[in-house]
Image (cartoon, rainbow, N blue to C red; front, side, top):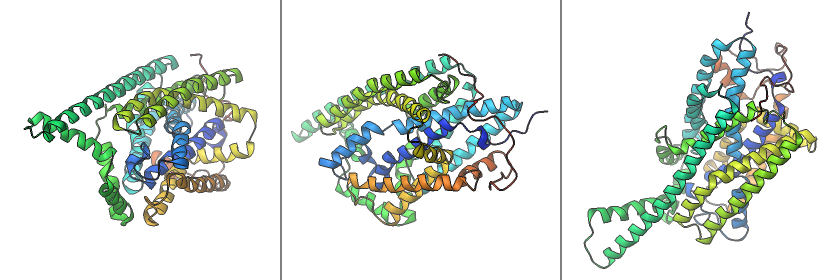
Length: 449
């Protein structure tokens, strides 16, 4: 008789994955904080708000080099791996017939959480796009690691090609705008197409290079109370959430989810590979990623964050951040394996075990600081990282304490109860968890790829 299909027990958890997830959820805040503290355009362009000289410029460069795209990439890898883990646990318990029902219910609840999180707290949240991608990825869970890597590589190549085309197109739009503007200044009558060239470029500048009036309006919306806060988020979400499902913006997530599924199947994420493998992976990832990121920074700094420079920097972004993300996975595995900084790896694993709760908790904290307490737009770029440090300390401290008394984080408990249509035990003092294989013996057989 098949064992009841239920949430993973503490004995089944893979500590390496929890550790990486903890690093990712904390690291994501290092980039998200900019979106909470300033106008959305400041994420990529420090000249708009918050300072772009001295320590502020150094802060931007350090965050771009170490965090931008990498932490989200790591978080997304692990989400993809979770698809295979869920399926493997179902097979292990003889509950394969139930897994699709559980998986899609789990994903649809995540989609609902994401929509609520986006509109109520954080316009740049990832739960909604994760759920949208997750709905598409379930049929790929049994694909071989090699097949997953090939598919991810094809999507990555298309992303790079698409970004390069958009960069070239931005340059062409600027040329047309300059030509039409020059004609207009000379008193010539513009054609409808030429007037459209001017309008198209001005619309692009309106978001990427907002003026003082736009910044003031954004600040007032973000500090004017709950309903105005929702309106500020909705203005950005109207763009992101209206994108078609085949939009390249979603491919960014799909690439890393497919890669995460492959890395789980090959034993990379479970720590099953050799120390030499992780050393080589880390060295190769850094050797590719760091130079590409320096090229990216040189492009934007050389033209002082012009619109066309930001577009060309985007063409370098994807291969750079993927290489760095793989390097971070390898470095994380080496760190856990070595036992160095064990005083930190434990709290990080606990933070990762409660990743959903901690992710949303970051949004709550930032909403309080920047919306309720009205710090939005008032700090310099480097100063927002004092807020980051405070939230990191809070989450590293509270996560292990919470898990000494409870089986799950609050949102993890709610999500699992809704997924399985059954109220899950919450307190550790409740009925003991069923016996299961220890996390050091992952159920997925490593494959060579």
